Length: 164
Image 1 (tube, rainbow, N blue to C red):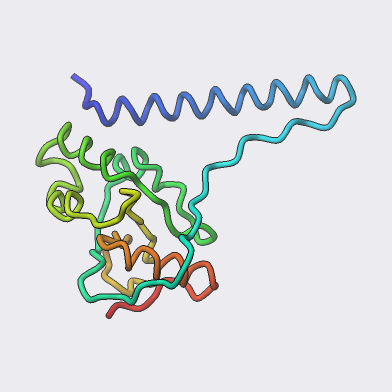
Image 2: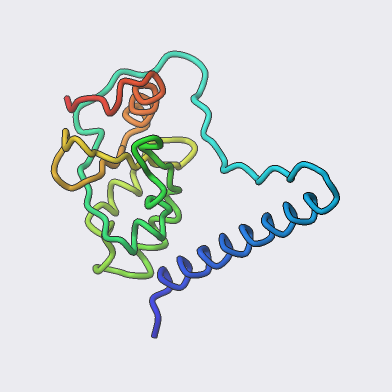
């Protein structure tokens, strides 16, 4: 019996491959007609909210280790040195916890995910390559203020903000 999360990850990968093949086919057809290739759809981006960024507060981040299956399922395998963070919906994380139970990498963080204070219900995962927060490899922002501060720091080219 397959775990639902693994099946969803496989379906997402199959969909991505099918989309790439379709883009390739469209590009080949356009080239045959002597036209420029159509643009591939862009990944959705997250816009910073207007106004001042709230101050950071101690305890707004958690060091977290995720196995390769979880990284793939949440799309965190796309994080690179050029794109350090990814937003993940709280509902997606809670569903994964419900499906896998105690074997979920996020099981111990269920209470923090449920208590997330952001109106958009998108939590930020960020690579921690310099191991500022821990040697776990990633940081999870569990407060909206921390998410906004991380995004602002990264957007300014300052990298991951130091721990408080």
